[in-house]
Image 1: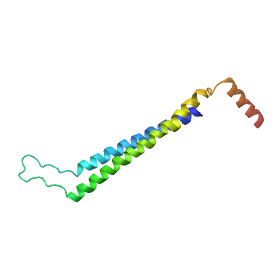
Image 2: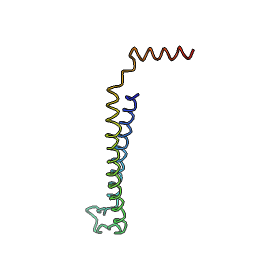
Image 3: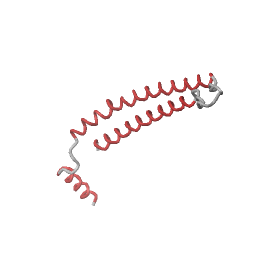
Image 4: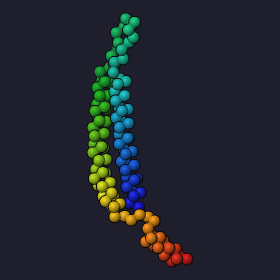
Length: 114
């Protein structure tokens, strides 16, 4: 049981890391979209900059997401110390599932049920 809980906890932790990384990449792309887009070389018209208030709001959003990512990564890192390491120690003391004791206990359980 400790093995399954350990595997699921690691999967949960890795999933959160992936979510946070993807969300940050999305915000980086969103930040890049609102930057000034240069025109082609044959155009005589200068590029039109985005409105300053929009750039300011996007920069604030980008900063907020980066701070949120850092906070969440700290919380996810706590999972390592609070769950994964103790479960790893539990796994050392957990006997393999197909030992004679497990089979005898399973047999006694079925005999009691019948």
